[in-house]
Length: 437
Image (cartoon, rainbow, N blue to C red; front, side, top):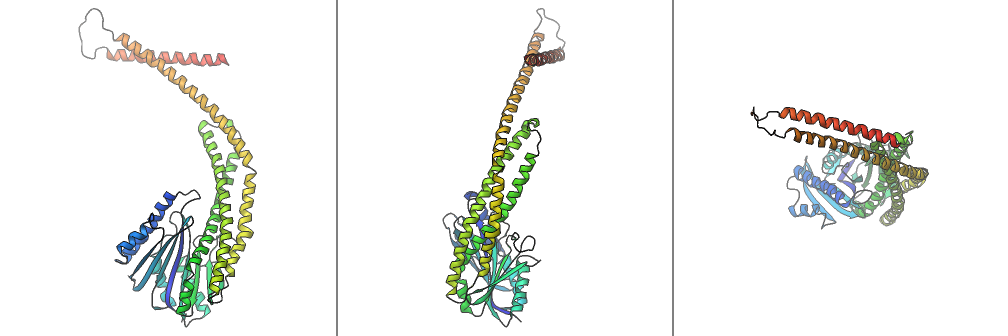
């Protein structure tokens, strides 16, 4: 039976720091919430696992751009050694989880360990999450390739999806076999990669090779960051493009804009502005993908070159991703942008036209409001005059029949006179407007 000595679970997790419509203040607040939850979960599951000063440093984003959080303790009968590495990379927050046990586990026991360690990791659906990749490693004993693949399949179900993986690739890394597994939206190659669906598995023949492989975690961090940014930009640009097309078609379907109410005219104008803003965002996604694919190629080459010095390293499957992006992702997004750009002039002309209708309709409404206020004012003024005149005391004193004598009659007469005055004023305004035409 396959046995793993000192199994390790790593999680490379990334969050947007700034840009793409997300402010630094907002991202810091969201990311700080993620870190607080991590600390809270570890403290709850393994009481006393984190030193107080280490916890405060880990949560201090303002003065500590990088920080490590170490912890250890027993959880579900697993003696865990854990560590979080928090880093700031360009416009991104990078977070690496490293959880391990210093014991020998058979394949069945590994799944129990993975479930336990997963409870100590952040939620992949947290705000501003760019993506994450799992990596399982350790020193393998007594197993064969079939058992390793079975371990990978069960681990994938434990960590990512109960339905298992759709695709797999293999390569060589510091002289050992490296496996990668992932899912796509429809299960076919070339389709949109599902968020947070990557799993890497690398098992080493001895402790020395194990330590050497982990020595390149910074290069892996950069490679995986670039890939997640590309996948994220691809998914968001595709969804945004579909929304832009739908909204544009809805606006185009309006037969006569002049019949729209002022409210609907303003709503349509805002929708047109949203189309222009969305198009700008679409271009930013394209620029991001073009930049990141260049960075990705550079980091992959550097990783392959550096690791090859310690043993055969051939990571062609990483280059396949790059080729796929260049041959499918980028041309498709470039085509979407080109197609939408053809409608820009029409959108701008329509925006000016609706703006003109809004100004005309707004002026008409303002005149109507002023007229209504004037009519009401005439009525109120007339009512006040009648009320004052009706309440004037007679010259000859009369017998006082009570404190409210005559008051209801005065109010009734005032209301009637005010209403008649308003009606006369309204009719006069209508007749005057018709004569002017």
